[in-house]
Length: 291
Ligand code: MN
Image 1 (cartoon, rainbow, N blue to C red):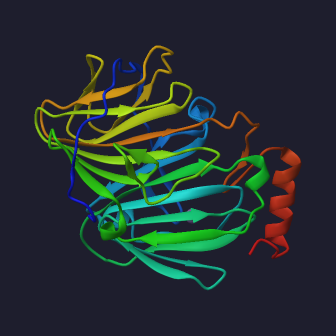
Image 2: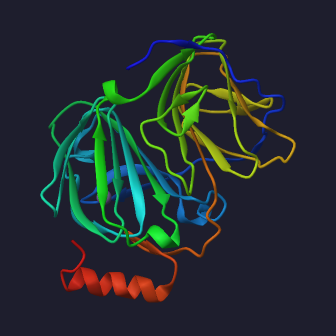
């Protein structure tokens, strides 16, 4: 939490409405980590440039202990946000880092990495999120890149209404986030709303946006959004942002970005534009050319 400055709410004249409430799908990934896939493959077009959002929250080590052993990625970015617990990552280039308690790892897989993500605890609560952000076609084969941000590295502010805002990406109320990206202009906010609070965020109407509530319950344009649900926000052409209201204490992620409007070809951890590029990724992985 680098900044405690009070910021006045951006004026939003008209809020977007909720187009659809999504429950997500319980699934498991890696070596059997139990999670909820909030943003599934079926929503990749609608929520372009975002490809996936997984939420994991458990106090049962059996649900997370095996983690995600060595696996490849190509063609997109992963953003891992740990609320509680500790996760160690290692990649084929010899990089290593520990992600814990409010920290973020931003990884651009680009042309390819092989990495592992392994919990560093045998008990206690493990909670967090992994978002997949697509890369434009011209950047899919760029050099891999990553950075770890401790909670204290992430820009943070409090609105005059008492809402705590962590700006992981993009810009909110003139506070610039830890990461910015030109092509997709991602906005990634973690919002802590006290009871009775209201939070307004301007959003370009062409950007796709969604809210995931992970504590409590919210209201958007008079409609209720229950805990552990994602609201896809309508791209209302007359709306200039979103206004989120909380009757009780609540926490939520607000995520938005500019759609790429390019073809999406996904096979597991590879997200390219054509099937041919997917075959190439599989061949490169098999022949050890990915890392
Ligand atoms: Mn991974």
